[in-house]
Image (cartoon, rainbow, N blue to C red; front, top):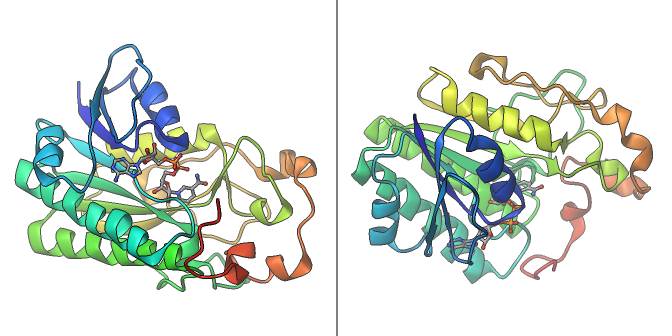
Length: 257
Ligand SMILES: NC(=O)c1ccc[n+]([C@@H]2O[C@H](COP(=O)([O-])OP(=O)(O)OC[C@H]3O[C@@H](n4cnc5c(N)ncnc54)[C@H](O)[C@@H]3O)[C@@H](O)[C@H]2O)c1
């Protein structure tokens, strides 16, 4: 059975993947906070900036799903320490431990200033971050490319959209990632024989969406936000102008919550 290390395994996305992937893979979940016990899941407590701890956590691992980080706008120094330095430590640990594949949690906000396009926007489009947070995600995408080109690691950077049970607001409708599609996506990325470096949009098959889905890696989303869009709260007109929605106007460097 292949072994998958999930950093940030106690978080919103991490706890879903930890539970749902445990049927098919041997899951090791790493987080700074205490984690609930899940059958068949090994839990490790530590910080991603600790290289020794990360190398130990990477032992005998086939793929790392790196989710740990600050998931929203925050203080510059904190974002750089956790999202940039922490991700470099994860990539370095994977290299040292001989892990062949690392899947990085990037974000829609790496490209938040992109505007709706008539034809689907490829994920290979360059970052246009909307916040310091989004900038850290663009930066880890290129760091992943460096580790792939230098050391031959397969690195996938997933620009995750709005991971929600149902879209919270109208701006989330085109970028919704349903929980089930999230599981489908990360399973596909662990399983695919595709190697090398690539950036991938992490969204469902949304009828209102304008982001190009990556069939080559075997991701076949089954959900469409059109079926649940009526549950979304209204959004201001300006928020619809850019992919990043309200993030394009929040004060830089101020924690959102
Ligand atoms: N949830 C979304 O809609 C969304 C959208 C785009 C991108 N993402 C990205 O996906 C990832 C997971 O998002 P989430 O919503 O589950 O966030 P979350 O905050 O719920 O989970 C992050 C987890 O990382 C852990 N963590 C933070 N700093 C750590 C450190 N230094 N060492 C070890 N563990 C640490 C936290 O304890 C937490 O359990 C993040 O990188 C986020 O930026 C999420």
